[in-house]
Image (tube, rainbow, N blue to C red):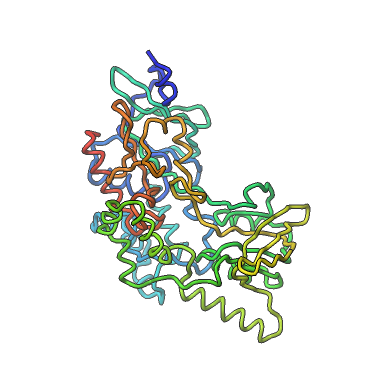
Length: 441
């Protein structure tokens, strides 16, 4: 019999769907859960695993597969190699099977092209078709007790239900859309995740474009826009003084070592904040030298020709944005002098990143899909979800099946969980160990 507390915590009656529960149900099938699926196949083949993916035909970073853009990541930090260098699913084996290994090794590039990595991920994804339901958007999660054993029941948008003894949420982080753009509903404003889809759908070339943000993606988008729309005025608004060079010191890059993950996890919140401030330029609001130099030289040449069309406005913050039939009117404040300027643009691209888990204004308290069961899990005194070292959420009491977060835990595990491939396969191994400890399979 359900109590009111059970109902509040997302419990459901044990009538449930007819199919048997799987050992592991993954929500999302991007690189994080794909890496886990490979680890399960290779190291825990007796486990019965299934995955729900909202997109019918997912394309990794489909909105940002720009010509010439690269991974900014060593190719061996792929889906598997750090966990299992002999794996069939390595990037090197992918190149070998495609007949491109020698040609790739001869490329005068430090990092792989983003397009090629997207093809690699698609190649690996297609080998798990029988374990993935595409077009299955999870909308609700609840807990049922069947024969005295609690299990998850996940309901999808089409009404289908899936049962599981454990859950791994790997949905990716939520795009961050800052004020004042979060209140706009117009196709003339898009987040970077929709960049290519947006510009390809334009019926006519824009004459003026604003790019908001100072990230690697912002600079790549500015350069791509300059190539696509050579006559357009493009203004990159950056809150800091200017565009910053990425910290690529090998000492700083040790933040992407598993030893740093352990060190960061044990630190208190004040120390985590200090470490975050130091590590931030290795991954956020900073740019690789090649694209930064390309942009600066392009702007210089335009000034030399007396025809500058690309501008970087530092110390600038968009205070208001109003959409109309022809574009978006922006009021931009100089953050130090407080001077305000107004500009009307045809298109706004938000290169503003993603939300991490936490209580802050740029964060979200928990993944939205967990709303129905979030009361079952603990938050610390600072307002953060309590995540165990193996990425399992800490339940408030017995009777909650294991639930792991995959690729969402930067606020608890540090920069290695920032969405890059750096520790992807090792995190999968850690979650696998956690599943073993919970007696899954």
